[in-house]
Length: 273
Image (cartoon, rainbow, N blue to C red; front, top):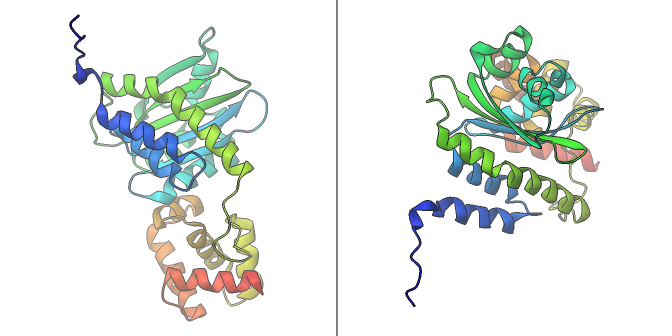
């Protein structure tokens, strides 16, 4: 009997390999990077954010990644959740009106957005132009995947949209599984009494132990320690990039430091005192 011949061009080997790496990374520190690699094999994009969007209650961010500004996705998702922009999101409202489908997809362009505040915060300021959104509602809490292109980039191709739609279930379930694993088995701390990453704690540490800083300098330094990029800090505080640089320079001068690493060390000392 002649062995069957398979057309291997039907498979994207890079995508398949990266999917395997994603599975291996579940519960580990490499998960975020592995998930980004899977998605970049499926489509060219600038940013991805995944939200949990229950029918009742507040949205929450499950995952965010930006290609060139690591802190920007975090800043945008925080703005989306804290500002309750899920109620203004035209794509989410549109997808929720569709019935009878557990997985729903829509392509949105910046010029199609009527709500000025929503467009300004999530498209104009971060220079994003369009997004593919997929809403999975096969459980009590919907999972909302958003993949963005920059202004000036080529539009999403049919292949890219198809890839993202096909991967959306895997992506969302992987995120949920990873979060469950990391809650059950948190990684051992690398340092004693590590600094909690939330901004409220960082503000308190900086204000209590470094009284020379102004309120705005505290806000900037807290976000530096939390991992925000300069662009993300500017967006979150609604100031210009030049203002962020000025506040950082003044704060470092008052603290007698010259680098981000020294700022981390200062906050760590404050946390363990």
